[in-house]
Length: 502
Image (cartoon, rainbow, N blue to C red; front, side):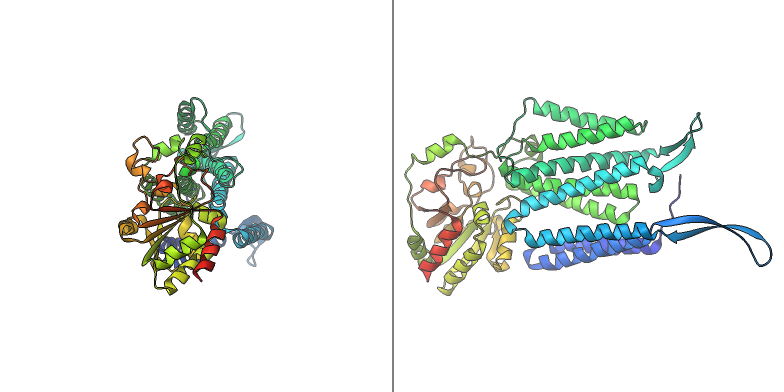
């Protein structure tokens, strides 16, 4: 087995980069420290990339033959930098940097969920390509021993442990890629949010997963090409099959789950590349994504297995939408809402995906500022799964410069609704639905929700009464005596309320 020389300075640099990544995760745990966390992540990644370039500079080795001044002949191995390959690497980095900066500047905050899904797909694809390159040229990665077959043909014998790393890396990477592509299409509206239920999907999924694991185990004994490529193809297929039955309501869990997958894929390839930074970073991303998935599942009272099984969170059901028109409800105007808000002592604003779609976060902050000028206490209540990805509402409110001290998580503010004059709900449906507490037959039963119905008055902005949330469940809050429905585009409605307040 080839013994790789470890550069102690490179190990130290990777250690520093790993510490920066840990500090980045710590900083990103709070909106108040998120900018510092981002900076630490940038510093850590810069150190890791520069260290990798310096320690893995491509070289060309040549034999030098000559005679010394003393008359002795010598043969020496000379190494020089392969300038062309180095330029190609820098060019690839430059192209990627331009694409990344351009995308970051142009993307709307409402499109962040699908952007995250797209980035996850690229990480998965990169892992697949690295695994394929390692399999096709294992000698370049230091994971093989050159042997000579009985027929005299040179043969690269890939070490069994490297085959495990390679098999897991290509499998997780392929699942991440195809699954993230489907998630992107669903989030971007190219595919419907309704779950696509294949007949016998559980048996098919379990069979494909078992086949992948079995082939990886067999790959340690036989490195035949058909085994590697079969693992790759089946992994692409299972990624597709796992995500298509998952509906819109489960998308926050899916995004964090795919984030975890991309981390483990990167860690597996880090072992193949003998790159400590990739192993550390991948492990951090994989474990943090897994923890976040658990938190998301807990916030929805669903198990991770039930999310993978799919089927929750379809498009609006026709029956529920029709039932909505048969129940009495009160409609209000912007002037009515402005009067009630102006007379309140405390207002709790509950944002949801409807706010994101209409991009109403800036005018919503303006409304909050106007109310504060009138002596009203204004707070924002965030449900963990509001929107299409973890932290979606926090990101939008931060973009609008809403003070961090005014933003509260569900468990910190839920007890205050009973003492609140007005709960102002803007585009949040399932996360405010009391059926989660009372209706055992409801698909969202047991999910922690915001108790907006306990406020003295509920102002509920909704585009129309004809639709329901991602879970396909009608919301009883619409029809309560203390609820006033404000129908129309969320941004336009809030703009009218601001004018009325003034």
